Image 1: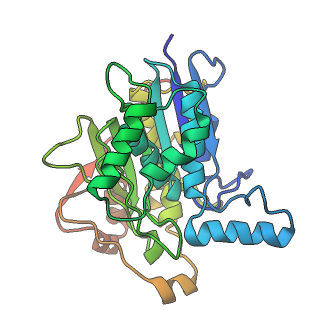
Image 2: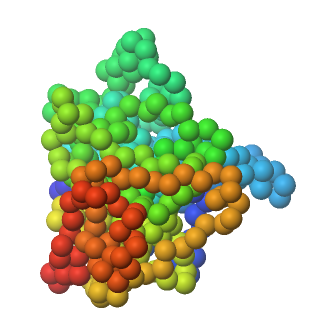
Length: 352
């Protein structure tokens, strides 16, 4: 029997807490994992969270985590681990769901891209995963030789499904994807992370208020010449990066709006939740639109200020319109021409 495979990739330096968890953690906790024959899941806490295995002393562990934050040294490792998980559990007919926040959202997109470019290698070939990642995840402009190397590797080692190497993904739900490998480097060139051609449905929640330059938004932009077969919904929400993706303990209203939006579409694609989890975690009231927009530290504003400017015609969540009704000045955050999305954002999607 086909099952759901759920991969959850968290943001930078996230630690699981009693309160103030990211939306990735909250979603993972909502999953119904009571029957492995129906649904199983994988969670990774993100870049810069844990030290490397070889860091034995407290100072070495601290430096290892800082290195992950500064240059994103853990992104390939996180990608390799998630890919290895799918290698060991995927069977033809299974439905793949991928979720991510921040750099974890970019890693989620890279995982999807790697499934398109490389496919899935056969179980028992885990020793080749680091090489597969190195063939795919290059920080450079791609040459014909690079593409030939990638295609040769995929043809030799990947397990074709229905005559195709690439693996399709049922649903990708991501919160404020940022491309940065780290504060000091952001020149990634990993294929298919922008177009996502092998995903049936994508939802990307983007922050209107984030102003840190290293957290530049990485938008989904389908190829107009070869449009993705699935539905891409990219919507702007009120709040800074962590208001959209979660972590602030004092006011969870804004992240709950984006969590519900991501979860609603996942339910449409047959993701399984624990009984009562939907009502408990994502029930909304009109006042939630007025949730606190947090400020980042002054040092960020002084050294790395960059205001986000959504393009004309962007899709903006209906909760932002409700916010503008109470605070007309907030309209300065959005372009003059917008498409309002999710007009029934307060409505529960049936009994879950």
